[in-house]
Image 1 (cartoon, rainbow, N blue to C red):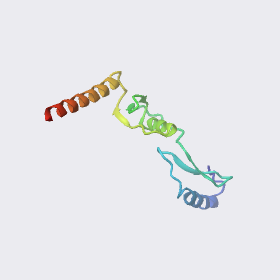
Image 2: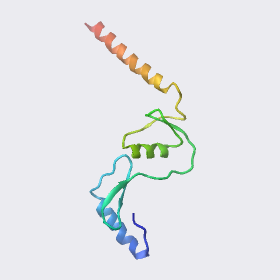
Image 3: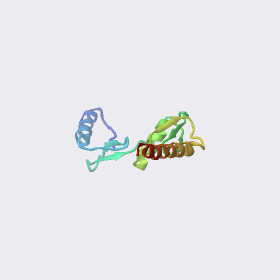
Image 4: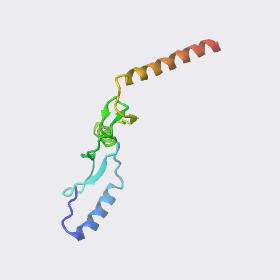
Length: 116
């Protein structure tokens, strides 16, 4: 990362960061940073979230204390996790998903039978 030592370093380093990160794609919300020594761009996930308690239930059935915490988990695990709903995940989340899946399968099978 770039610590700015002098005011004149700011514009020089910002230009270098934007130029180096221009061709870099960071997935899952990671940030592009440039190593000061090697001048190499790399992706890094956010390390901190504000101390806000606003729980959300993730698509992985995990309760996160905030949307920011969910995004950090998605980035660090390098997989898509989205907000399933606001509030804590209930013990029934998996069963509701399973019932919807089962209903879809039953209706699909029954409709095929009716059409034949």
